[in-house]
Image (cartoon, rainbow, N blue to C red):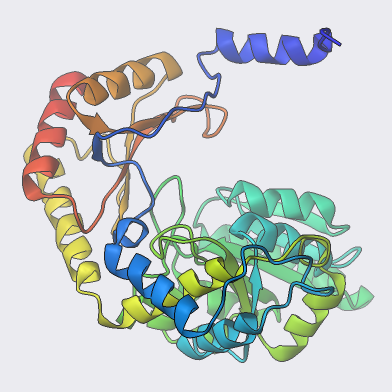
Length: 384
């Protein structure tokens, strides 16, 4: 059948007209300012070799998981890895999911119940938004990192739910993926406790980067006992695949029984679990985190040196975004930087709000000062 639905074709044509059509690009050998591999773990030969040694040492020669974890796929490595994760993150339990997207879909579609209330930051990740859509809860967004707006929403809804015995969930990220900034987690914890709300924090871009050994921002601030659930993912600084939800043992049992993205999917294969295991071991001894933070500080200094501070969103994370309004313009500047050997990707609307299109710089432990200096000097000439 060669026909294609006209409505779908029209949507594609609209994307093309707005310079917003997404396409898959092949990997390239350009200087990396684009990937989420903040610590270089994804390309670490040492981790690659340790995974192989671990699998051989445990006589594991299995390619696939063979089924879901509730059927035949619950390999004994799951118990080992989940115990390591829980211990590392000072959590009562950990439950591994196949990806951060699966974890957020599974959590938010099953935990908040009908007529419960979810209050979420307006810049929350798409996977959380999709999970929320699958729930039967009432949902309200608050202005990005605005504590007063959150407090007012909690005050309004706490009075309503107290009469109906419903629950309130407050949702934020410790590092926002499209801005690179962070909320005042201490204050959000206090506000949530004041109204007896359950706080959920997505730590995808904080794990491996912040805190001693890369435990994340929640733990760095000693807030893990005040957070109902944390999401940690392994496709960013950890350089591998999968995710975990951290919480108490009752939450773990609930998710095993009611989270559809956990129940109805083939489990991760042993090799993926061994990779998570090896990456956690590497976090304990690596010096790459210190190198990363030195690069972050150097990048921020070079922003000021090139008079670009009015273009960049303030950030202390590896993510730094230069606002360049308009899909056409930001794509052109990204292409020019790529021609000079730098791998940078434009972030277009509708992924971000129109007129807030941007170049998203991802910094790594392996970026050199020379590379940082050159790319920002070039950017300054293109922006001006």
